[in-house]
Length: 62
Ligand SMILES: [Zn+2]
Image 1 (cartoon, helix red, strand yellow):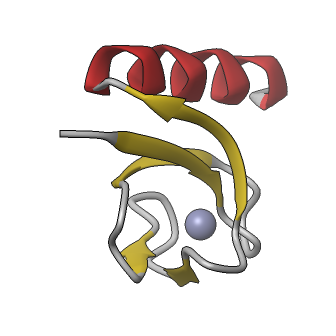
Image 2 (cartoon, helix red, strand yellow; image 1 turned 180 degrees about the vertical axis):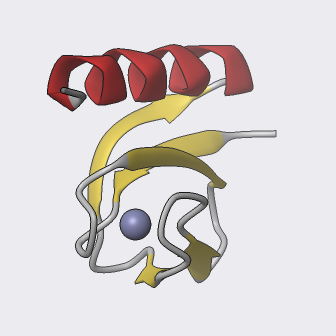
């Protein structure tokens, strides 16, 4: 199974979504993210994507 890390256009947090899915619901704010338009910051295995998400979110948390 392949995953992508996408950035939510509403709250700016990254989360992991299944690659090939059309949309994804942001776990932070509940926004529906259109995966064809979303900013993808990483793709690969679940582990790689989880790492990219954690790195992205920790760099912007204050
Ligand atoms: Zn969000």
